[in-house]
Length: 87
View 1 (cartoon, rainbow, N blue to C red):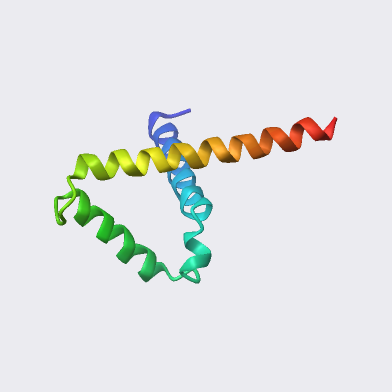
View 2 (spheres, rainbow, N blue to C red):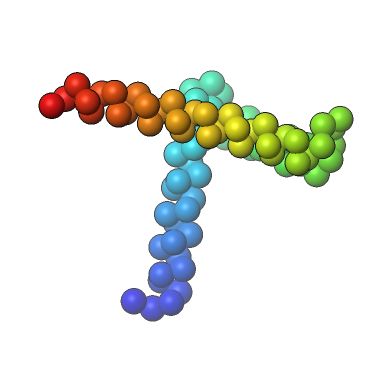
């Protein structure tokens, strides 16, 4: 495979994963799949990370990371609970 094709495939996979996070967070349903609203929300987040509020960007990232890890752990527990009842 050519290098450019591999890079393109990796980028596409990465973008699909990011879209999955938007879906997993419930943002698609909460915004009625309004792309302008989603973009506005992301721009607001970017502004916050650029220091546009009272909370330090590092503190925001820490808070958001903890919430995300908690959500992944909860999802994993639910998935494992379902799998243990399958057999």
